[in-house]
Image (cartoon, rainbow, N blue to C red; front, side, top):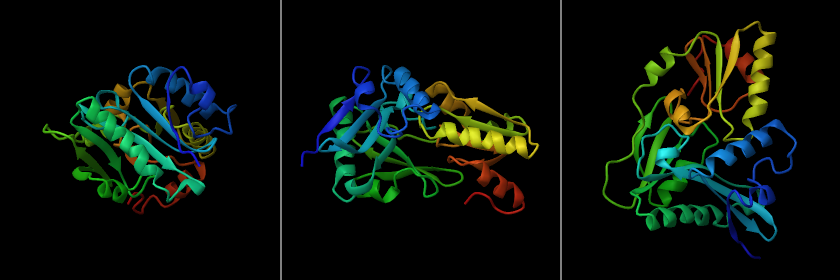
Length: 258
């Protein structure tokens, strides 16, 4: 069976889609992701799909460090946002082939290397995969993030920012949900959280991160594109819904984050 890798660009995104939510084209999340790609593809975000015959089996999304939506300082590097291989596509080396696309492009462009953010507590790709393919851990950020790089040349290593406390201090009281259109799943989580907060009598509002600069500057965690803060406390740095919010606040005297 052929396993072609297709590059998605402004000319073909409406034909081939962006993998996630491909069966839900009428949802708000789908439209947010399509709009996000419409603005981000021209500034350098890359998206590649791998196929089993006519069916897409996985994808990788990445961007130059100057335009990444992860909260990292990585000029001169390529930064992976997401990589996902699903179902029967797992265990066939598709992830390695997608990663190879990024590394090859970084080499061709003369970049310093390829960067990714990992955490055992998110749906980001696991650290072990990247370590197996020549990456190394070069920085850490609270509460459980690690910055990995595959070096292709000599340069200053990428880093996480160090201003997490000051970021939190700038966030108003109540429930504040940071999100972007980078992931089509975010819309349903934001709606669920706002509805739950309203039912619980909690003041809440959402903040859409509309540019990579805003994500890198305002996000409360390295994940960059989603975060939930309540009264100055980071409740979640991964997408979650209203039921999870209720459970967290009911056990607010316990350690919420790992």
